[in-house]
Image 1 (tube, rainbow, N blue to C red):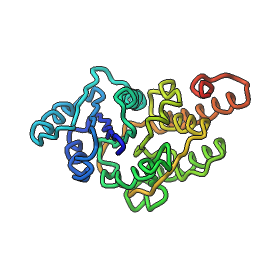
Image 2: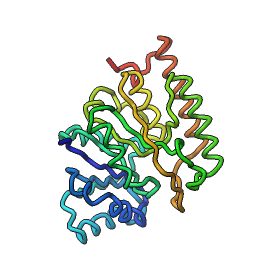
Image 3: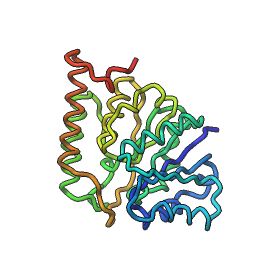
Image 4: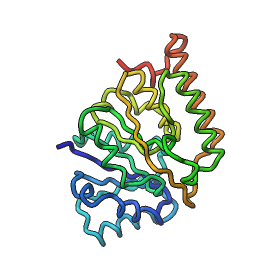
Length: 251
């Protein structure tokens, strides 16, 4: 049986975190080795809510960690993935603490990794009906545009690159220098580029889309520009014009 870590990154998620953990299927909640809540120096009481939840539910495999200084979305992932590797996990699941992604979908997303048919799996909103799920039109169109550009540069055929519902094989993570990726939100694109360079298997599965009243912390303009910058760096590195360590230190 694979040793699975469910990593829940949180930032100002006091209202939604208990709901997210509650919605993890009971069988899976007991099956996984650890549920790892990592609070990234929230300005609300997310950390205390997590501790209170653990006390009230007596969930033995729930572990809580609190960063005293904000590491950023990418930095928080780096911390958790290194933790997963260092502690001998086989699979790490990233489930956002803001309830945008459905925990009920984890068993379906886990399947390709448990069967060793993938090195990474992500839940794609764009294969379903994201607008019906409340995705704003401008986000839908922006996602489509960026995905088309990214597929062109990387010669892939993914339905999107911007879902945060992701699962990784820890053996695959050991093969790439993910610690060199950005600490910002475009970490998700840069690690996909690393998987592409290493010819690792990327599988996407459809997931429902849900947009509630959660606050987005992403600056859309800088996010888009950072993605273009990452693609340009990939091209320069691929053509031997400029060595970019995060894309060249992959043997």
